Length: 263
Figure 1 (cartoon, rainbow, N blue to C red):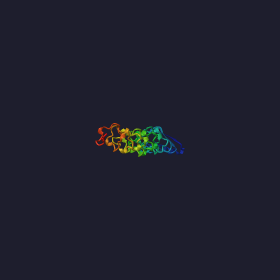
Figure 2: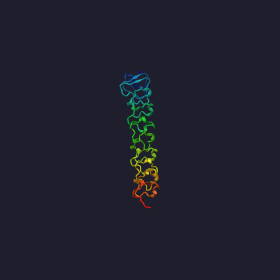
Figure 3: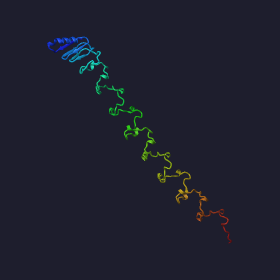
Figure 4: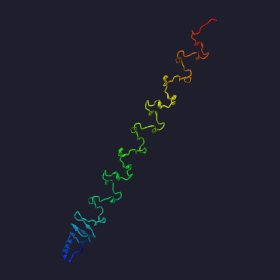
């Protein structure tokens, strides 16, 4: 190791300086006192402590020996070019020393993020898509009230259990879509039937009884021709006005109803 020292001391201290130089030149020990500039032009292998209280210029290489701390209080002395790639580990970084500006693009992966540490403030707008959401991860607490629209619902997703009581009115029912199967027994009364809309085809056989007929509502047009039988006529209901002239034959007369008179 070649040493060049700039001495700023008086002549009467020459001998102590020579002693210092002798020590500095000893193998395995380099020491610089305050007021002395030490410049190393070759390679220096330091196996013991190196204490520099002045200026240390290194033109070659410094190889670490057995000491754990190669350089102490070396602020401003070592830049990135002096550090071997891949040699700085987490233990050598001060707390908070690595900021976002020190991180390369795409340098932080899932393995580098602590579980459960990413909050809403860390997410950019629209950064979470359906692919990032686990199955069954979204419950009602995660959905803002009133934000689920028709487009958000899958076909047939709304069952009867999801419909609130009395929530479906006429505006929610497609016209002409209510079928017989949709009506409960006894659910249609007179108020639900449009006046004059019940026709013969709507009536089952034998459903219209005498009690359903309004008084004097059955006239000749309502009676099938030749359908009135003897049992349909009340006693004394047929008088001369009801008999067609010349229509009574001998067979229609009883034996005692005609008297014979002498002329």
